[in-house]
Length: 230
Image (cartoon, rainbow, N blue to C red; front, side, top):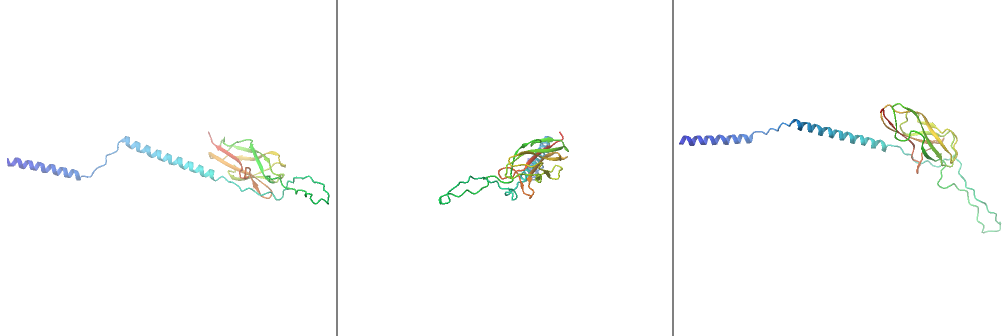
């Protein structure tokens, strides 16, 4: 009987010892299944793709924000001032109440050197061309100022892609106020690298003054070209 109780206590002691050892044993993380590993890889690839899309969008926003603007130029000092004639009134020299003749004034709101953009003759914004395509870009404009342009006036690159040119073009003929004409940049070549390219051109007077069109004469004649091999 005593031996039976002794054996019983030995068994209880061994069970207690095994429970203590099991509690102290370090935990081992379970090995992930093949499906779990594939899911983790897919999540990592999706996060990388999202990051690349955000970086591409930020680069495009930066490119657009760097488009140039120009401060409006003052009235051309070498151009004649538009004079509005006024009728003269014959008065009696003895009439002290007679009003003097009004002085000649410049037409309000009109500057010597300004123009309006009327449209793209060819290659409108968003035109798709193959890499290395040769082309000439033409716009229609109108002289809305009070000065006559002549062939010493130029088109000048104000910002963006030169498309293989020297950054300068010509006003082809004399342009009187109110006259419309087409201006062209010749010998342009699309880049060999695919992408969207921008170019901005203004008119430059012989004295170096540059102007564009718009409410503050700050907009250049634009080109937006998409280069794609597809």
